[in-house]
Each structure stands twice: as C-alpha cells, then as structure tokens.
Image 1 (cartoon, rainbow, N blue to C red):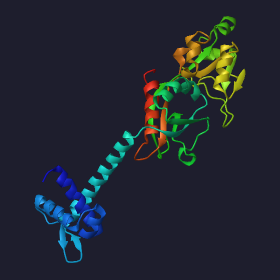
Image 2 (cartoon, rainbow, N blue to C red; image 1 turned 90 degrees about the horizontal axis):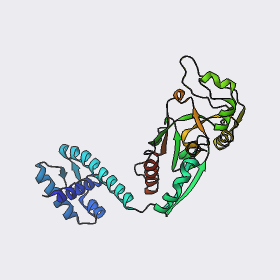
Image 3 (cartoon, one colour; image 1 turned 180 degrees about the horizontal axis):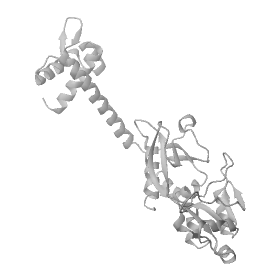
Image 4 (tube, one colour; image 1 turned 45 degrees about the horizontal axis):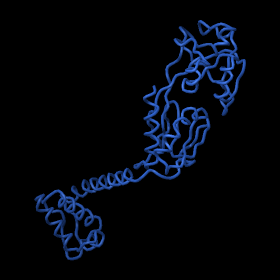
Length: 299
C-alpha cells in the first residue's frame, strides 16, 4: 500500500466514521460503497487493527478506530489548509486593498508607489492617512502601518523597520541663534512642537539626559502636521523633533542639520499589522512583503 493509497484510505475511513456509513461516505466522495469498504479494509490490513464494528445497517468505531479517527481528522484538516494556502499563493494578486497609515506615512510610501503599481498592476490601493487608532476589523482595513507595540490579539504583525527621532534645524537658524550643546539649552531656542490631533497634547521630546526627566521646551510654534513642522524648520523658524524618515530628503540636501544626536532616545519601530486569519490573501501578502523589502534594508 503506497503513500497515495494510504491517504485515500485515511480519507475513506474518516468520511465513513463521520457519516456512520460506507454508502454515505461513497456518495460524499463520489465512489461506490464497495470502494470505500475495500479502502478501509486495506488500511486495517496495513495497520493490523480492526477500525470498525460492522453490522448490516451501521458501522461503529472500535477503540483503535477512535484513536486513528481523531488523529486522521487533524491530518486531513492540515492538508486542506496547506492546499488552500498553495491555491492562494498561485493566484495573481488583484483587487482593492484598503491600507491605513499615519499622516506622515505618505513620505514613506509615496516614493514606492510607482514600483509597486508596476509590479502589481491589478491591485487597487485605497490609502487612508490618519493618526487616530483605526479598528482594522470593524472598519474593513486590510493592512495598517503602526508604530509601537501591538496590543490587539485579533491582529498579526510584521516588523518593517526601526526609526529614530532627531532634533533638526536649518543652517541659517543655527548661524543666527547658535547650536544647543545640551538638552537644557533648548529652553533658549525657538522650538517647533507637534500637537497630536486626537487629543491636542504636545508630543514629548524623548531626549536622554543624565538624570531626571528630559526638559520639555516651550512651543514657539505648534501644529498637528509633521509636514508643516519640517517646512517651518527648513525655513529657519526653529528646532523641531521629527522622525528621521520624515526629513531624510532635507537632511540629505542640507536644508536641515541634526543637533544633540547623542541625546536621541531609543529607536521606535514600524510594523505592518493585519486581521489574523488562517490564509493571507495574495494582495495583502505581496503588499506587506513589498514594504518589508524596501524599508528594512534602508535601516
């Protein structure tokens, strides 16, 4: 009895045990009751164990049959799951993909969109930029990009990459006002602070200091837009506390310069999160893989 015969024998055995009849099992499998009975008999011969008590009307599992039934049902369920995963993998990624990102996420994602569209032209992206905590399950979101720790057991996550915050200002500002040499010096500077849109509070500047809490300077200007803060800092209005990926272009071309780099706090992290399920549809899988491919190497 080869491997495929064993598998077909197990399938016939499980269906017969579930339905309590060789006839019903044959109808479910599209074969004759006699073929089901022969498959089960060959399996019994191979195992040297009787699996059913047979009567003219019904069949009943023996103790050995009950043991095999429980294990065989799990094996067949895992095979079905693997088959479904392979079918999903073989399917071309297509359809609408709803993605939730933080407001600053477009600086991360926008440069990648042309390549993603060229690679997966049949995926239609619906992007929602918001700093509120979106309920992925209730709002039908396929994938979200989030920072910090995952605390929702309904979700799965994959690390996309770390990021750091940096204190930045323009060369013109530092020529006029000088560079701060320690965190305490920030009190004498024009500081540009981010205000959370969902609660109106100022974002803390998480600087490392020798002892105590880091100073929280007064806000010369505050707003709920990272873009506006980056522009204000580039225009020489003051010093801003911004994620490095949000000002990568400005730092590269010299419009902004970092200060107090040794005082930067521990890095944060971005993750892709999605509703937990047995099978991840191809459109979600390739989008998450694409983000990881482009964001992880850059860190």
